[in-house]
Image 1 (cartoon, rainbow, N blue to C red):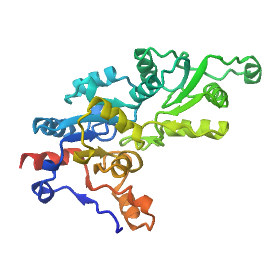
Image 2: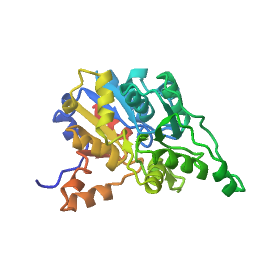
Image 3: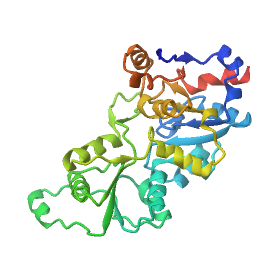
Image 4: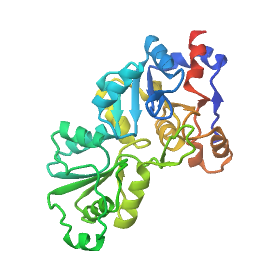
Length: 309
């Protein structure tokens, strides 16, 4: 098989029938629609235009820091068309996954409030979340630490309160082979916009717990199939061959699409670059070719004049 192409979307591609081949638009959020709390210019207008054309919009995010209700408020505030069902987050996927297993024990969360609130909505008990700083006298602390015998699952996601005690507890619970070990996602970093910072993502913490425990986490977020299973539960009539996945990251957004027959569009406002795409195209490794999107745009807003023409 030859290298996958990656074409910039232009009037020729639009007029050739791309939009007619799409019923559902699946889109990432961070680095695609917004950066932090601000919409990326043109993103609101494009999503609304696609919605007005009759496309179903599904927001598919690996970010587990918010519940779906909290995301809905953000979408509404920024002007994106959304309903609760149109939001598929990894926090929601965790709750759905455990509920499907009739999970009855407690969850230890190395992560944010979004996971906790989705578990609570599913009536799944969890240990407290929030800051857990390392004591100055940390050796005596290790001798006094008691693990909760009712914990049956560890969920690792993004946690800006990550600490030595949290890593210790997560790894210690996971050392029990009967304890479920779940990762919301493996994103190595968050898009940071123009700050110049490299911001660690959930994958950083997942790898840490895996390294010390000797176990591999079961990841639920993009590019894993379970994200699509959650979408299918909400949209049973969906045909993934008539979808497009829009994202800013090759090894999550784009790989989810190329693995499962979904058209893919990379926007260059987040993590991955066009230079990376070209390197993957040159590779002799077929797996790297799966990291090549069908299309790209410098910014999602660049699609707006094409939709109006």
